[in-house]
Every structure is written in C-alpha cells, then in structure tokens.
Length: 88
Image (cartoon, rainbow, N blue to C red):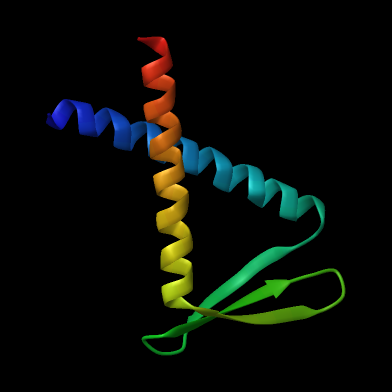
C-alpha cells in the first residue's frame, strides 16, 4: 500500500508545486510580491505584500488557512482518483 500512497502524494506535490509557481508568476506580472510572513500568535499570521503602490499587510486566521489547504488537497486527491477511475 505504501507504493500507492507514495505515488498519490508525489502527484499531489507536483500539482501543488506547479500551481504555486503559476500563481507566483501571475502575481509577479502584476508586480505583487510576498515580502514576509509574520507569526503573530497561535491563531493569526500577518503577510506583507509589496504592490506597485505600497506595501500591504494582511492578517490571516491560521485555522482558516489550514481549512483552505485541506480543501485544496482533498480536491486534488479527488481529481487524481477520478482520473485513475476513468483510465480503468
């Protein structure tokens, strides 16, 4: 079973890496860059973005970010599973 899970996780990481770089390129075209990520406390983090006008500081709830990442991972796994089922 480990071989099956390793293949699924590898595919998932490749997809996530590809999406990450695509989004980073898209932001760079709009001259937006993540400057730093600041740990506030166990519940919140701030992200400083450099934009053409000025730097922007955004506060994120860590639980909301965790939930969003989990949803993305589940969607990728579902997509991989659906693709595997259509091939069979």
